[in-house]
Length: 252
Image 1 (cartoon, helix red, strand yellow):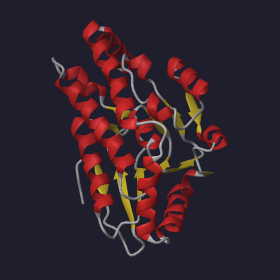
Image 2 (tube, rainbow, N blue to C red):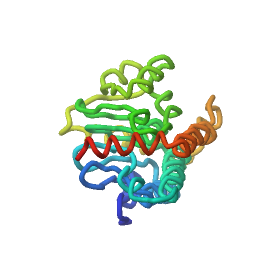
Image 3 (tube, rainbow, N blue to C red):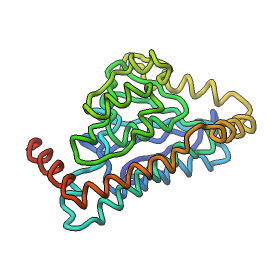
Image 4 (tube, rainbow, N blue to C red):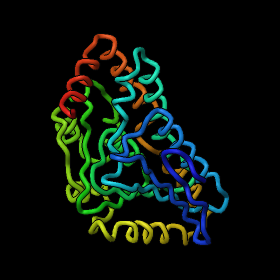
């Protein structure tokens, strides 16, 4: 299935469905892109032949988060509301996917990228992968919910307040990244894990995904939406506008 910002290959004989993010130059997704990604992951899980979904990306990095330029161009709040709803949909689609989702991460994984990876079932990373939330520097809040699924509480807070990044080896140390491999071996390593899961009885694996979500200690949907409320507050006060303008000015 081909869509504008991601593509999903139908399940092969091995039951693996690959969803690829491909939004040059840095995989910063616009509003529609987040909804397209949500639809692709959801459809992949609904495919009766699917046993595992592999979420990967083309280009320089896995995902740079939202397209801030789209928000900056909007004179009102339509783009902001849209991207918040789209991110919630995409993160939720990964979490609620009927089959396990394996995230194969290379390069930068920022903002919304952390939201996707934090909700994945298994993470395999290239040795050049870095993870972080630059939200504070952009005048927004969100995805602390998902970063907290990757690192311990105090490290999450330090990374969140400072907007620092952390590398894949550090996440492997905490157990949130399964394997760290050279960039050239990332797809093969992720497919190997996917194949291991896909070899199981799909009836059992689908129920296992549902059971694990059911015993999760944190409601990721409610927690993330709570965070997003503060993003709206920052926009109403003008703090978010100031931060985005500073960022886009520095980029120019």
